[in-house]
Image (cartoon, rainbow, N blue to C red; front, side, top):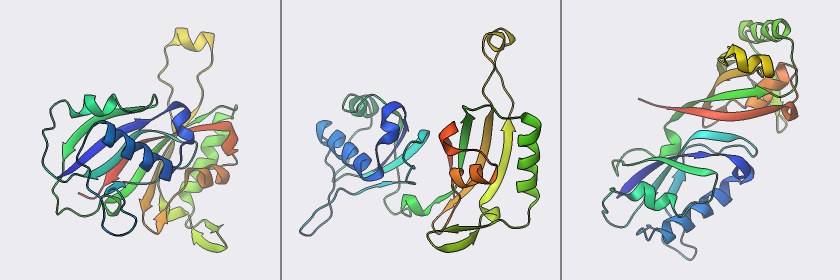
Length: 218
C-alpha cells in the first residue's frame, strides 16, 4: 500500500534538514504502529520519498511525502493518529492512497510557488522596476558550484503581492512587502528563491520564505 501525506512545516522545524525530516517521519510511523515497508540489504531503509527537499530555514504549507506500507490499512482516523506522534511545527493536512504503480513522487514535481516576506524595508517602485527587469531579460547567467547556468527559464512567475490587511491594522503597523515566485523545480532544472532575491538586490537574511504550493505533472 502506498499513502501520500501532505503536511506543513513551521516554526523551529524550519531548521530541520531533509535527512532529519525523514527520520522524524520514520519515528512517527513507528509510534503510530504503521506497517512501514523497508528496503532489502544490510542497511534497510524505510520506503519513503519527499516530493522536493525544502532548503534549511524555509517554512512550508505544502510538503508532500509518499510512504509505502507492507499491507492495506484503513485511512479512517490515520491523519489524527499520525498528528499525535509528531512534534509541534508539523501539521498533517491530508492522507490519501496512491496507485502503487505510479511514478516516483520526486519525478512528478514541475514547479514550486513561494511567498517571500521582506522584513527589511524596500522601495515599492524600485522593487517593481527590478522585477520587470528580471522578467524582461532573455537570459540571466549565474554560477552554481563552479558551473554556469541560465536562471531566467527557471523563473516562471515573479510579482509583488498586494497587501490584503485591513486599514485599521495598517494604521498600527505598515504591512510588510511580499513577493510571489513560481520557479521550476524539476530535477536538473531547479530555481532557488535566494538566487532570485540576489538578482533583485535583496539580502536573503532580510526575508522570510515559505513554500506555498507544489505543482505536479498532470
